[in-house]
Image (cartoon, rainbow, N blue to C red; front, side, top):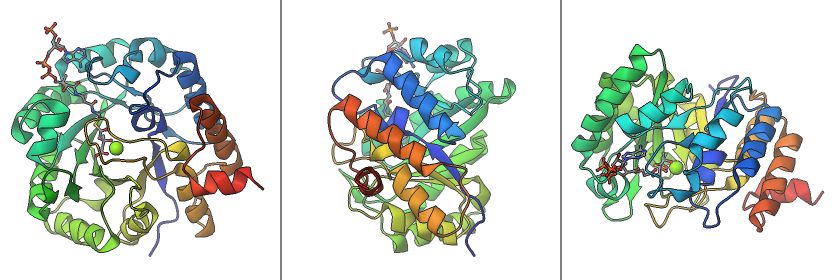
Length: 298
Ligand code: HMG
Ligand code: MG
């Protein structure tokens, strides 16, 4: 029942760093991405072309992205609107991600729009990307719970997922932005999406690990056919516009589990752990990943 191979969508350099208070030098970010690629990660989300005042940490996107383009990996970037799309295309980005919300509260906090206004903002971006042959991922935040609204009804999530698919997003990433999901809820949502004819092959899962459920939730998703999993090296992360969010599922914790299950990821766990230990030094505090800690103390 479990897949033979899982594709890891590495988000450490974007979701991981976007919440860091101290600005990380561009050279350190570039080195981080380079090392992640050397560890065998094939899809590394590099940065965001959002308003620099909204996410100051990623204001160096124009300086960073050109330093990465010699790497033989996919380098998706976040793009919220036409202005962001111009910036990304000018640098030759070939994969973008728009980011919608299943709840009104987070749409307002994160994008200064209602859910439907945000979808309308993405529409020309996705159309342009498709014209240019650029691959489009659609994130959907607050798929399980929302800090202002509590539990999120499945129908709300299904509606926005369907809208993103209809718009032309080739891949969807189901975000548990504040890390409150549990495996039964994951099964219920995947079941509802299946009934709504959203193909499971198009789905990725994006768990934050606030309550320590991210791995269990991932396993539940894999059992239902999902093969794309988002994770952040060293468990870095959080969302600046959702206060209760902590880091993503740590890529090392994920790879430890998948290695144990005999599921191929192409990732060299020792190299990855060394990268996260190095990054933790740069940030001045230990990695929250259990696997990084265990392997660093061997
Ligand atoms: P707004 O204030 O409504 O912007 O923000 P606007 O459209 O009214 O434009 C205002 C000014 O900003 C204009 O300049 C634009 O040109 C400029 P002016 O004409 O006044 O001089 N502007 C830009 N400049 C540079 N790049 C741009 C850009 N867009 C407008 N792209 C906006 C709307 C979408 C821009 C803002 O809300 C924003 O940037 N939000 C980004 C928030 C963000 O990055 N959040 C974190 C990522 S989402 C996440 O982490 C969740 C995820 O991990 C999944 C999960 O865990 O759930 C993906
Ligand atoms: Mg996230």
